[in-house]
Amino acid sequence: MPEALKRKDKDGTPYQRPPAIEAWIKKLESVEVASRVLQFAGVSRTAPEHVPTEVLLYFLRRAWADGEHGQFEKIYRLLMKRVDQSLRSKIWSSRIGSATDIRDEIINRFVVLVTKDCASQADMLDFYEVHFDQAMVALRTSVLRKFKAVVGDVTTVPLGTQDADGPEVSPEVEVALESFLSGNPQKIDDPAFRSTLFAAIDRLPQDQKQVIGLLLKGIPIDAKEKDVMTIARILQCDERTVRNRRDRACKALKAILEEEAEL
Image (cartoon, rainbow, N blue to C red; front, side, top):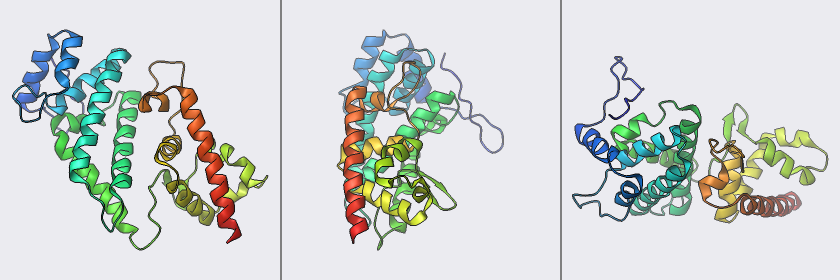
């Protein structure tokens, strides 16, 4: 029996999956795990045997809750492949920004939602289990509005959290940039410097920008505990690769910031 969703409408009515989604879940719950995962992959969306993305998300969340991390990672890769393919067909470069930057920001936000949902076992992804495409439209709209708001200025991907004075830089990045700050940690509190820093991050190669972006969102590089979502697990690489990308990013940021300081 599919586990009930926790989130409720404004009137207190619990979210309900469409009957077709419930039917798919019930059908696949009785299928061997390996066969189920195979059914998730490689089928055209127009084919009758295509498994809706809402169903993939259901089994992704259940795999994490049940501690089935190998199964989780397989479903996660398939889910992210679907998200990426969908965005490539819907997001194009325009005057508000490059398609790559916009898609990356949407994907990063979705990854953070998955991470927080796994960490809290809450209801953050409940609506995605009800109407995945509609939820993604809302997410895309939110990101596009943010990109439109900075047309005419330096377009930066919002990689950190916001406070009253601007983006908040994580402790990891503060430590990584310590050599640049030359013993003046107060500079990191300067909104103008933070704005320059975030513009510099936007100039990094995509693999490095992705690592720094996830660090800024508070996601650890690696963890011994299997129930902790990490950058290494999100990017499907070992922690040494993540640390190398982080170190190269920080070296590049130092060079960019020094160049800006000389102008």
